[in-house]
Image (cartoon, rainbow, N blue to C red; front, side):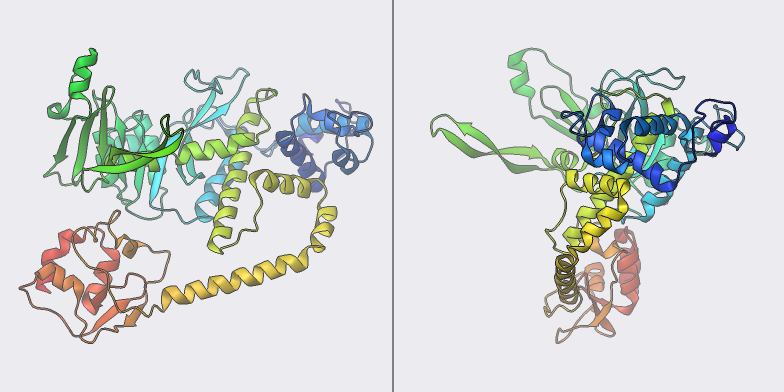
Length: 536
């Protein structure tokens, strides 16, 4: 409305002399129209203003009614929306594009960076990769992108978990000069380290592809307060791969059979900052190189996949072997791709539609990321409550769009299903309470063994000891003569055992003395405290 006033709309001598101020409900209705367009595309969005009697193919009776029932008035009003829609106060002074390249969408991006970390408790396994914002027009910061199907546009480095976009940084924005000077790193690594600095806890594993990963980045990420353990593929040159494990690429088929599945590995020892950085080379069809801070051991693991057997004329399970570091990377690197996949399922700015303004492309990307994040949380909420009464992705977006179009009518329809919803809610609450009681008051007196393997901060059976999202409450031990398992681990079998003041953690199911209870739940590198524990 302010922008329309500044351009003298509404009978003040400028364009659109019939302009009237938009209400919040009306603005949301126009945004909801684009969500319907994403679910059921038409060559032009304005075609949905027609009734199905006037346009049986692209007309929409629901949209026709919610916008007033007069197609030509609805089209004119939508032109007003496209002409004056803005996400930043037009009365504020416009800063330099060099320092604020995303100024026109700054409020939305700031809101995303503020809300996204607060709405979720991040899991241990994350991944970092780029997300693509397609744009077909001309712009100074538009990037040439030939390796993605969507084509040219803008790129944003993102950290994601299970399809949830936690943090992002656009590549056409300047990287932090403070980080570049402090860590003596490139702008690419400075952006990644800036994203890592936003993580709330420690000892995450962060998967990366060969564009980002290097021995220097692994070392810098682990030196930060978050102690992030980077893993992933990397390039053989200028990335810190030791010469001893590099393999020569062969071209002959006979030579390929000889060297295939050859594995070479090296471990960085003696570095004060980076602990046990593992570098691995695996010859597949050509040499592939990995760097990992999250690798505890290196071994071949047996897997299975479905293949068609021509003799039995059916699909059977075929065993095969895969290196564990490759398997871990494959299962934990696709978080950003999953977020992209969910966002691309139902998006307005498809190949049919060309964004009129560069900031519309970024605004719609941000809006769709928020929709995707909310749907991921929606599914996790139902999974937590053991509920199967949830919407599909299509129905979820459809319900949001309908709510934006006609909130009073949709609210009235929801009242008719109130009784069923209350029954489901009560049932899920009972299941949640029962599961909480079972998890906090276990009747089992058997404890988990404490050893070097189980104490690993990410891969061990006791890695949940560092999980701060649950309450590790002390319980009276049910063993007849309980002894501190951490002292037993530190001192060995021949050392003295501690029996006084021993309690049991309600989550970890480990017997600990009062002295060891705090160290056990807060110290990730507990191996380094072994001597101190033994002497206490």
